[in-house]
Image (cartoon, rainbow, N blue to C red; front, side, top):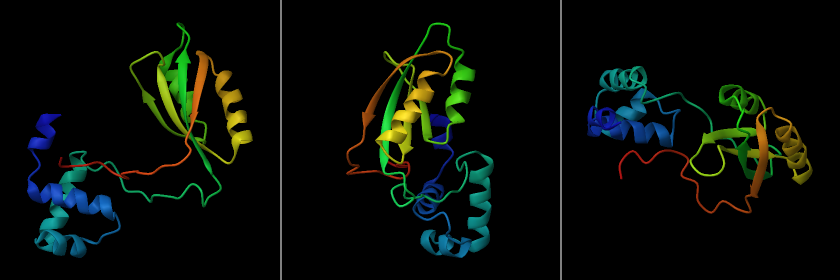
Length: 156
């Protein structure tokens, strides 16, 4: 991982930070922010994309405004015979699941989920409990989110 960050110079990092703040920035906007010409910015952004530093572009949606008022983290404890690839694929096919993380600890995975209500969450948990390889779940409901970075701290 250190090798990847080593190939980034200050201008690359400033471009990544600017794109994280606003992925809809034009090359002219980015050029003005970092003090380069438009064609140089275009080349650098394309290089960052090709090397995998930029995985894609997306809009950050407001789940509450879209009717998904409840966020929770579901710890998934798997059975010894669980087939992890199939297990993850099944979970990923459920639209309520936003993220799946393989973790160290008692549970095998932690999933971030967004649902309309506690009833909707209960329905999702019932579906999760029927997934082959699932031994049990533990759910933590989010009461509020006082801080969400919305990106990666490129420099620390």
